[in-house]
Image (cartoon, rainbow, N blue to C red; front, side, top):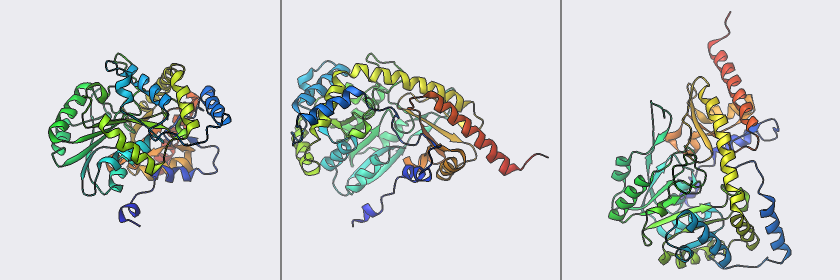
Length: 404
């Protein structure tokens, strides 16, 4: 086996989740998905497709009608170029993670330098490593004081210094998992211009684009590199049906890329998965056609969940946290609990509370915890905070001893 594969770390989130196996009393907030089932009309479209006999191969790049639907969806969010422009630049993939891996396979040779903005979902670092790249991490910084204390921000000077003509690819995810960090359009334009000068590809994971709470853009979505890029820029943007359409288990995503790269990505899809399942694509098309029934309601509910959880955590002694501007995670630090993996395991065993350890997302997030607030019932979040506070009080008593 290749050494790089042997060296890959197992998921620390799974490691924590294993602590709760067989424990129905555990409040599970560790995985990055809503506990709400996919809408019925989406499931029914998949069933109808199977009943119609859609059990055969499809085009490598996806069903033409789904690509048309994604192109119309993309043009609605990023208007001005027209549906035909986007359709020539789309590849349907078997999940967002598959799309990201395809991008690394297409662009990265062994020995290439890849810059990744961290902390980040671990796959974003692991995929270039699997291809034999040398990964350079550019850590986000934490605001130490002020109204946004606890917020993670990008040091633009540090990023520009890290990206040189030797940098083959820049990988970043905004809105960010786990920190909730977002990029402004001006920052995206600056990054893109710098990468044009160095000849660096940008791989932008924008799967949380629609889960954006600031609402300071015309379309209500987070700013995208697609809004500032030229058609043939060295830019690949990854999307997924998982988050905004409540379809995590369906494993369907898409890439937006230069038209000159589409054929090559189609070949790679052939050698990876051949194509995405037709019945899943039919379900996704139904999701797009009635997306206004799903995503806006989901966003409003996530904002309610965020606005329920974050103030309660901020009012908890020892917690450092800023309200996330995007995504579906509260990312916070607990004073005196620097070993976040051990803390997360203890919370499962001793408090019945399941959170993800920050170290799962990189060493710069050690000491932090991620709480996915995508819960059908916001009262589960309240109960979770109650359990956290009770556990903190018990832990403090165990350290200091009882008062006599």
